[in-house]
Length: 75
Image (tube, rainbow, N blue to C red):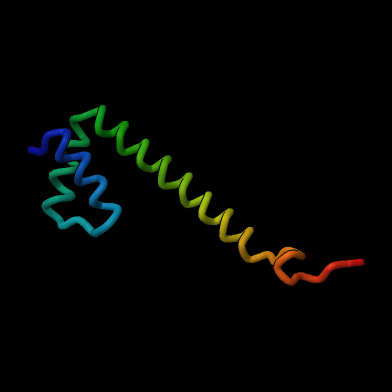
């Protein structure tokens, strides 16, 4: 069974690549038994959601031309 250090590493790896079946099963078993790692997983989700929201906000602001960037001015 995974220890907490390996479980948290695997949760982070899951952001970069798809985990194999065995890896997912091991992680799932560890999470079923470890409240601390379940909390860590929830914190990772909150951070992912916050970063996604920030990126979407910044992307929306970057698509609107300002008057300094060549947008029409009303003089």
